[in-house]
Every structure is written in structure tokens, then in C-alpha cells.
Amino acid sequence: MIQVQNLTKRYGNQTVVDHISFEVREGEIFGMLGPNGAGKTTTMEMMEGLRDSDEGKIKIAGVDAKKQKKKLKQQIGMQLQSTSLFDYLTVRESIELYASFYPHSQTVEELLVAFDLVEKEKTWVKHLSGGQRQRLAIAIAVVHDPKVIFLDEPTTGLDPAARRSLWDIVLKLREEGRTIFLSTHYMEEAEILCDRIAIMDHGKILALDTPRELIRQLATTSRVEFPLIDRAYDEKFSTLAGVKKVVRLEKNLIQLHTDQLAETLQDLIPLANSYQFPLDGISTRTATLEDVFLEHTGKRLSQ
Ligand SMILES: Nc1ncnc2c1ncn2[C@@H]1O[C@H](COP(=O)(O)OP(=O)(O)OP(=O)(O)O)[C@@H](O)[C@H]1O
Ligand SMILES: [Mg+2]
Image 1 (cartoon, helix red, strand yellow):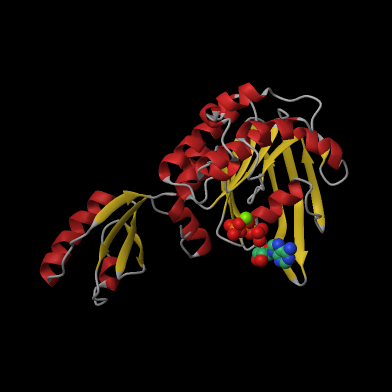
Image 2 (cartoon, protein in one colour):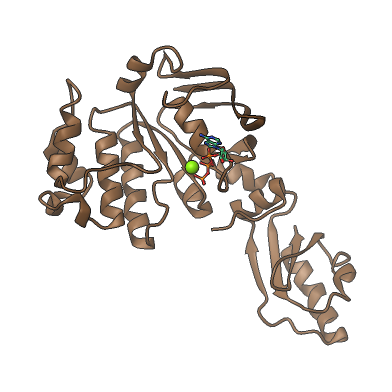
């Protein structure tokens, strides 16, 4: 549904999107995951025809996004990172206004129901909660029934309940057969929603695959973490069964990367006993996308 080749954007001598290429399949939720300044919004706005690119090709639903901007607009819906809505219009009036821009649109009633805004139809935009506002922004983005929808950090700043309700909406949009391209810096969101994810940092795509495959490709599948101020044993940890890597994290946290969790723990406990260091606060877990990000960039994706 989307083909991007060699897409590049420069500001002065800084390359903020650096020759990226990827494809998005019809009906999938494709996520772009990266920290602040990675180049997500710039990429999306070039795809949406809102910013000019310096190099590269973009094709969306058969339309050349650089040359056929008018045609592109009919195919795509977009919720921008800072959608401007009119404070003194009601929810219903806002949807009606945007619907009036298009010859064919979904009915206001359909949209109010689909986006759980029926109770708020007469409320001014100004008085909506963050989650309701975001639902309205997406309702407006799909008013003309587009095939492809762009959502730029749709849940940033929302509380967990509002975030979950928005996830349901995004999943529903996919059920309707739409293709969704979203950006996020929430790992959990990417893992739950996205069929495939591109991990982006400094304008480059560092990895691209399904969440499960990205995690599977990590060198080790499990993590053991515990706080330990004393650094005297760090070298010993790398000799424990299964341990491939020992990492010092913030707050004196030590992290062991292992493929054999049980064996590592069986070795660790006698070591702690003989050297008399505490294992209070120890935790074990399976690797997540956070670990994928850490492996590719050397840093955590702070939330
Ligand atoms: N109009 C502009 N002029 C100069 N530099 C810009 C412009 N727009 C973006 N940049 C720079 O491009 C880089 C990428 O910005 P972009 O907004 O695409 O990042 P992002 O991944 O969307 O970040 P965030 O998660 O904060 O939204 C940043 O370093 C930013 O400062
Ligand atoms: Mg952005």
C-alpha cells in the first residue's frame, strides 16, 4: 500500500531523515518507533505531502505522493502531532465542518458512534478531555473514508485508560481494512498495536520487522536485574552459566543477558552467598522491544 525509497530530508547541513526505505502492506498497522528528534514527524509529513523531501520516492495507494498531492489527499487521513481543532465548535460541528470539505464522507452519526463521542456531541472542543480530543482528531482524519491513515503519536500525554480506549479505536480501523501508519515512543503501544515496526534513530531505520521477530533476533532472550552498588563482582557475572553480557544500568542496577535463565540463577545464588552480597530486588523477565531498542542504539527509549 505504501512504498518509500531512499527518502531524505536535510535542514542546513543536518540530515534529519537519512535515505530510508520501507514498504507498508495493505491492512497492517505499521509503527515507527523512536525517541524525540528521531525524524518520525518529518518522515510522516513528507509522506502526507505536507513537507518537501530532498531525495527519494513515495508511493501511497498507487499515488505518487510528491507529484499528485491532490489525489493523495483523497486516499489518506491524518492526525498530526498537534492537531488544531476549533475550541468553540462542538464535537458535532467539528465533524460536520471537516465532512463538508469532501464530496463523499461518512455520516456524522456513524463517526460519533465509532469514536465513542455520542455523549459529547454538543460539548465544545475546549471542554473535552485529552482522550476525547484525540478521538475527535482521529474521527476527523477518517471523515472522508480514507484507505490509509497516519497517526503521529496518537496517545502521547494520555492517561492509561484513555490510551487503551484509543488503542481499541486504532484496532477497529484496521478491522475495517484500513492501513495505518503510526509513530510512537511507547514500547508497549508498538508491541500491542503494530503488525510491523521500524525502529528509527537519528533519521535512520535501524531495524524493521514484527515485534516478535525483532525480539527473537536479540542475542539473548532473558534479562536478570538486581541492584548492586559494589562493582567488584561484575567480571564474575560474565562467567555464570548462560550469561552472554553484563550491563550496568542507571541506579546501580546490574543486568545480565542470558539464554539459560534457570542455569544463570542456579549459579548466581551460590555466588551471592559466598561473597555475601544481597540479591534484594532481583527480577527476571523476557526481553522486550525496549531491549531491542537498547541493543540497536545503546540507549533506553525513555518514556
Ligand atoms: N523545520 C525545521 N527546521 C529545522 N530543523 C527541523 C525542522 N523540523 C524538524 N527539524 C529537526 O529534525 C529532527 C527530526 O524532527 P522530527 O520532528 O521529525 O522528530 P520526531 O521523531 O517526530 O520527534 P518527536 O518524538 O519529538 O515528535 C529534529 O532534530 C528537529 O529539530
Ligand atoms: Mg514528532
